[in-house]
Image (cartoon, rainbow over all chains, first blue to last red; front, top):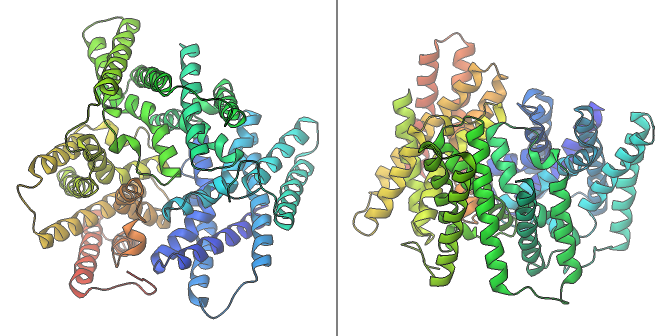
Length: 198
Length: 198
Length: 198
């Protein structure tokens, strides 16, 4: 589980650093956005759960992973490009991992199942929201297609599966697959939620 | 008291959803803004008080109310309009309720009375501030006329009344009436604080 | 120590209020920005450490200092000007004080030394970040020269000195001097981090 979490951290930090480069930030801004994008969702979840200090400040593997990804993007800028489709796929995987991990952590703390769904979704999309606010952009999750909705679905599937008696690992797998499948289908088909002007 | 809180939640969620529609957000963004506007102030208060998880995640009547208001606005968009004056009046009522409820909660936790005034004001205006930040607008409370000041007055009146020996219910009523009266008078007379360029 | 903290609070509040004036905010916005700029970093640190309510809400000398500075700026606007170089020097001093105070508080709570470095940096630059977000500007720390980096260096020097066996007061002095010296040298020489477009 921890290895999967670190992989998700790396992917999200990578994306945060790319956004920093696109926003013409310096090296420090690059590292801050890598950190905030990768770990901001989990930090908000831990603050709301009262599990303080947040795990991102207790286990240094997480910040280290985020900073390495941020430094890598900064060093490679202009020398290499990541194919857009690979990036979207990795991001969908990170989204699924974080939605599932956040929901599970909330359930284990005996938080109300519906609140666990919210906390799982926040874990998955909170970091990207902080990144966008720092770059003074309306958060992508409020504007762009089926993204947070996929995280919400994954969290919901996990909770329903647990309630139906599925073992935790099976429920997590179901939730992760649901989130990943919806997100990839939305990308492939350019799905939008009703009302979007994007 | 709880019924009044839920009414305030509904009004604030309604306004958040209207702002989402005006900002061309999709259904998910509409629900997020309804939730954040209605419950963001109370969540910040509970985080600062260390009362975690925040009450908005423990009592599901609150999120449910916010989501219903958000969905209603989304469904009715273009089919019905709420008179502007009614909306301002309801919002002033919500402001008063939240300022009073937040101050009382802080006092009951034996927090310093002046900090209780700040926490009451944050409860009343925190949600709208989050809404504006997410829409990348300078928060209305920092720009627009006598709004946060009314919440501050209500919180202050409550604290002074309690110190003067008034029973909690009477002090709450005094605070709520003071906030509501100042806000409505400011709307009617277009009062501005000194220095405002709005 | 407390006297130094209050001096730092005053300087940062002063700067927040100047930003409010420049942004055409009213008196209430001026006071909010003074408070948020001066005390926001410490509040974030205390929330992340789980030390709640935050010290800014427990010891009223802090908010009072921030509000007095904010009111002073508002009253004097157009009547007096602070020389830019003096302001930058005072700000560098405030940055050093907050970085050192934040790091020390985290170390005393037995938080991981590297997390203490992060928390010290957040204490120093968190308030300015909130100020910029409220004014819908990309935070200066993400764009502008060697500022957060100086806070980070000061926090790091303090932690390394403590690990090397230096008494707390000596370690704090070393950290503060390192931060102040780097910041002043950066101002004098217009140093930028690589990648900055500012």
